[in-house]
Amino acid sequence: MSTTTGGAGVPRTMRASVLVAKGEIRIEERPVPVPAEDDVLIDVASVGVCGSDVHYYREGRIGDFVVDAPLVLGHEACGRIVAVGARVPDARIGERVAIEPQRPCRVCRQCTAGRYNLCPAMEFYATPPVDGAFQEYVTIQAPFAHPVPDSVSDDAAALLEPLSVAVSANRKAEVGPGSRVLIAGAGPVGMLTARTALAFGAAEVLVSDPMPERRARAARYGATAALDPATDAVAGLDVDAFIDCSGAPPAVRSGIAAVRGAGTVVLVGMGADEVPMPLPVIQRHELTVTGVFRYTDTWPLATHLAASGQVDPAALVTARFDLDHTADALDADRTPGSLKAVVRP
Image 1: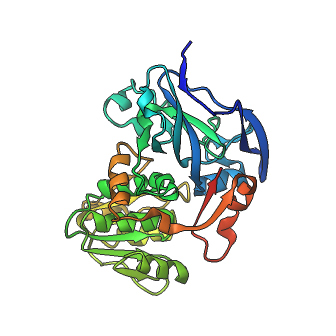
Image 2: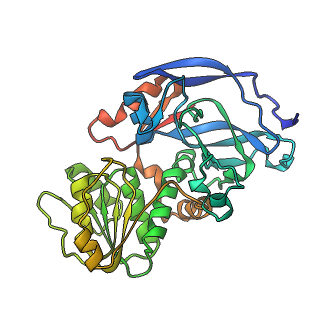
């Protein structure tokens, strides 16, 4: 049995926003979790609303992951360490941290090869049956609680999670100084991916989205050009990399046609289960087509990008809610002009 250090002023119970049925959120009083020997206990400060949270809320499932028991949503989170397990230094108490919301086994073939995001035994926040962060306190293994400087706001620290997806996508796309990049989808991940591409040294970042307000926002956020897929042809743009953040089959097909020979296609957006692919184009141009599933070792770089001002994740936030209005946060995307909602427990 492990012991816990710290916890002065930590209550025995906490409030949690719980998905109890499709479309139904209930506030419950729950015991504050006790950190295991290699865990830290975090007082949650801010949690971003992700599209996956919305999907679980409205549909009750994502693919094979089915919500068949009460579940706390939310995996984009930050807070302050208030207690530590027996094997964690007391000095960590009081640290502001961003949470990498996953718990791999750390011993399987994928983990030992450095691909812990592909761990078959992964436990991930807000993925059934693992609770997420729409509650006042959470635990995570100490190495996955990443310190953030005070110059990074709570909202920005929470959004280091989607920024980590953007970092992974740009790494997979091999974006570097002088690159020309096409990005489909100007939602939060698409915007962060565009800004990260610029931070990686891209000379030209083109963002395509059918919504005028999102194209305008992409331009303000730094995109070189904002394209309307209904009127602006992308085939033949001869970009070095295409990163799809939309999940829309037409965007994927047209984006592939925009890539130069030996270029790279990175699929980030989750949409249709199956998308027809132009195999002759892929073969003839020797394109590399790959996907992004979460991230590995991205928080240090994401933190640097935010702290240095090269990427401002908090600029995407268009609405903030307290724990009692989590359902409103999950429906915030239905408000015109909405881009990113956060919950502050």
